[in-house]
Image (cartoon, rainbow, N blue to C red):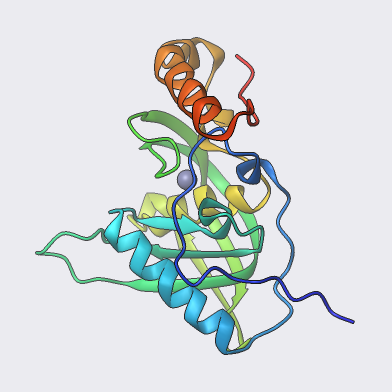
Length: 194
Ligand SMILES: [Zn+2]
């Protein structure tokens, strides 16, 4: 019997230090209407919360799905909404750094160094496989966005790539988030070591 995760009909953003953000997400095996509706809700959420990307664990679902709109939600940009299911990424090329932030860790931004080239294969909502190559040094910002979102599927946060010295500067904001989480859920969550 295959496992059928129940997908929220009204996904809500979860914040650091929610343990789901540290889970190893499972592959999607059922390409059905429920999945399609969920992906649409994720795209809507990403736009409502003004992100360039959103991964399923960020709405409490530990499945290998993320959505992107790397052009941003501004009025003078053309949206480029994409859904990535069961992605596999091969990284290469020289490293490049960009300032990153995350909807689940509001108010914190830091420079993260990542390889410039990302070759990715993924499935769409119908299960059809696709592949593409993006190079941040050629101006393809999607190369950065998909690495950030892909990390979420393995329970990795962008702050994990930040040096302890730089992380120390964010200590108070992280502490505040940890305090708020404990107050709301009565448990510590999965806090970052620093
Ligand atoms: Zn993120």
